[in-house]
Amino acid sequence: MKSVRRRFPICLLTIICLMLSSVPGLAQTDLNVGLDSLAARIVTVMDENAGPDQTTEKIRIAVLDFPDLQGNVTSLGRFVAEELTTRLFLTKRFEVIERQLLNKVLDELKLGATGFVDSSSAQEIGNILGVSAIVSGTLSELSSTIRVNARVIATTTGMIVAAASVELPKDDGVTQLLNTLVTPMSGFIPEPSPVPPVVPGETNAGVDPGARHGESLSIQREQTDRDRIEQALIKRDYYQALSLCREALAANSDFAFAQAALGYSYLQLQPPNREQALIALERAVGLSSYPFGDGFAYYLLGRLYGSLGRRTEARLALEQAVLRYRGVGPGRVVEPWYDQAVTMCLELYQEEIKACWERDDYYQALSLSQQLIAAFNPAFAYTAQGYSLLMLDSKQAPAAIKSLLTAVQL
Image (cartoon, rainbow, N blue to C red; front, top):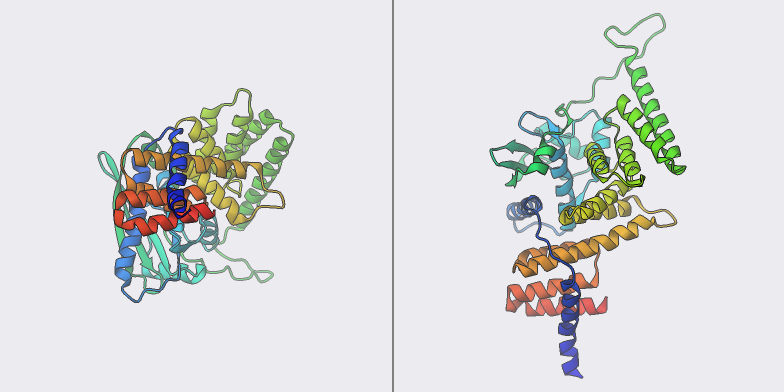
């Protein structure tokens, strides 16, 4: 009986390895490997600088957009910030301020969300959001790569406490993101002095009386357009939805919801126009992290990336959709797309882990297994973790066995 118990974890590992072997493997893209490396370096340098007195409590941080050296925020700068947010969260070392909330707060306070931070602005953000540190940085375009410089700034002192850099390959996808401007650099502009009240019979010199009225009309127009688009989608009149989305975008090209709805509508046509859907959805998440509010846009992107064979990007998009949906809290009935996103994401994790094993990259397999445990906690992630530990070092056998036994319990 004891012999059977000793062999059981190995049998379980064999079964799951056979199950994984039926799925074709795919290596991580250089872009995602670079971002993984950058996140790992940030954590390592922070640990080295923390010293022996560091606590086990999670550090509350905010990740800002990464502008280029001219101060422009591109889709690549926003993409890097989004991906670092996800990766740092998955380490379970940090409480990361949700990007949509961060942008909303900074916008309301008339502060830019870009990476140029000075001592006073860092302290101001720390006080407002209750964060201990800010992750910021810049993008530098080189001949064949993009250099990402990241730094961690303590909000209590405004001093840099950690820094790391990585070079990303400048392929067609990265170049397209780099050439797409999101928001011009406005810096950290303090809240303007309040306009003094107008006494009857007096006027405020220099104040445009139509400015606030114009902003109000713009918001009203956006809400009206959104309502009309939603009604068309509810009626499944996708051609009408396309027309309304184009009309709304003609008035405001930065209307993220209209871009996302445009992408969704393209997918509902028969036959679906996946090429235009992909363009619209990528623009939407470049304008706003979650244009539908609940991660659905990332779910659609994940499915599109998967259909195009872009498996790693699909996994990252689906994982972002799942985490966002959990973050905002599902309603009484869980949306069907959420369960599909979870299932697809787990399958893609298996593919990546299997691909790592095939090329003997057990460090990356271990990292992916640990990310999977943090995000989903499935049994096979513990099995994969145990196997990867054994392949890295036979001295890790106790930890590997513990991981395999956890898989059995799950």
